[in-house]
Image 1 (cartoon, rainbow, N blue to C red):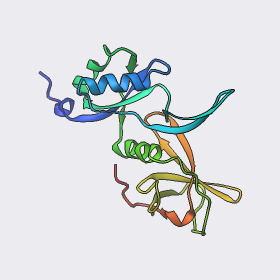
Image 2: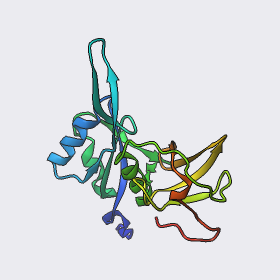
Image 3: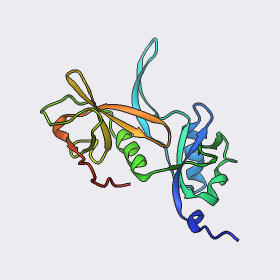
Image 4: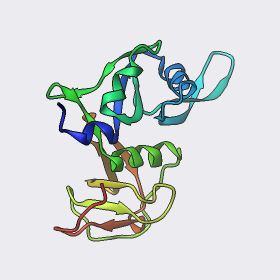
Length: 180
């Protein structure tokens, strides 16, 4: 008898897909009423005769699903899926704050320059309090004149660099709880 009721609670998980199959897998999951998320970003591609703006996955070969762990493997028969991302032999749970950070990052293609100063040091945790990245929780890096924020998605081992005006940042104080 399984006494662990956590299998019934939905969590975010990453599904590994075949290369360049993310959009098709995402649509197939939606067609099967599986709550899924595919962070996309716009980019300009150059061909010999034209330029075109297209949407590509923010993280290649991953689609995120929100399911109870016991239902997770129903995604594997979907054409284009390869496996579930695992950590220590179990499906790796993606924290809601990491999914929210991906939503924020995929919601805009803007780059920003610094506009004022704030007392930040390399390694400080910050929250974006203004602009298109509002709500993003990240770690601050300092590189020359530009301040960069690194967004860590621990479950995936991925990091993204984003330029954000310092006036848009709030330093998270030591001991302050971060929403997860």
